[in-house]
Picture 1 (cartoon, rainbow, N blue to C red):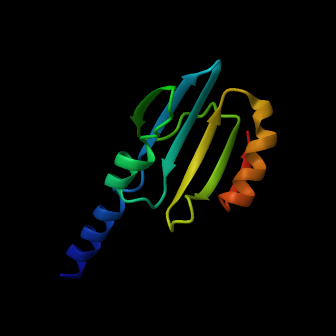
Picture 2: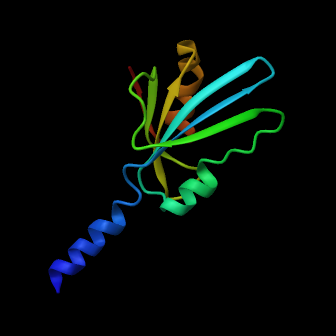
Length: 117
């Protein structure tokens, strides 16, 4: 019986891991690409809410991947989402000088750890 419980727990916890979404937005001469790697967000909530930004006047494309691509310039590891108990890693792509704004936001607002690549 214990073995089945372990497999069940392992199987249910793996739903939150190994899932990421790449969010690419364009609008008003601004282009942004981030990837959100799920750490502890329930899978359905991750897909239906966290990976579905509502950005007025912007074209938004979302694709799901097993893990975030390696070519980011920075990662906010273990970022807390909006005061909720959920965590994710946010990978940033594009303009590397944006790190001067993203690093303080990561550390102060998201309570994450900034890692430059």
